[in-house]
Image 1 (cartoon, rainbow, N blue to C red):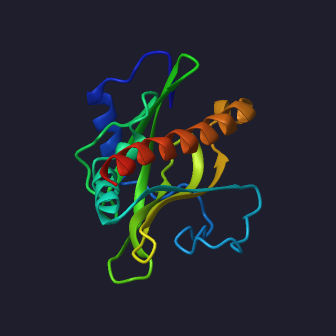
Image 2 (tube, one colour):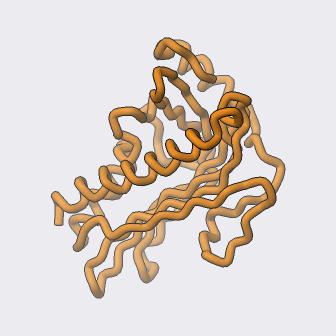
Image 3 (cartoon, rainbow, N blue to C red):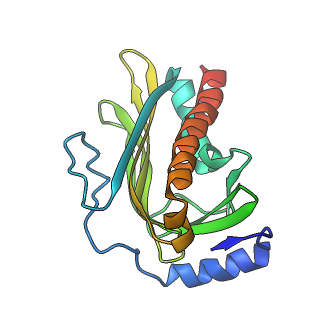
Length: 199
């Protein structure tokens, strides 16, 4: 899953077809859809939860939703979705390419659920995906937008449970954890740029 050379797009799509037929790579219920602070941390997993206000108003929320549909929360320079034509639909497989320390990796996850609650208070939109065996980690991650009409606040919420799967990820676990934290920080910053521009 790690390579010194950037994977060819044809190779990514070949692996993508394999990933479509694979189950998730963990055998326990992680239930990121619940998303509560009281959610127990499964043994052997770490929990990451970050939440920021990224803008204000319905226009900012709409811009953030469109950014999700275009996978712009992954458009970070060192990370990207390698199959950007993918839709936010249950069972869709997402290929996330990352480049760090001179190494390239592509990781494949399956969308497990969609959150689309226009009549909820707050209004909510997002999804959660789970790792396939073609991923250097095991676990689930939830990407969620919330809009509070009364205050106008738009929030971006990331929740993940993970543990290393690949031997290299285990060997370099402190660095892997730093990359996970950097992804969250950069993704929040990217979404804040997009939503604030529409506020």
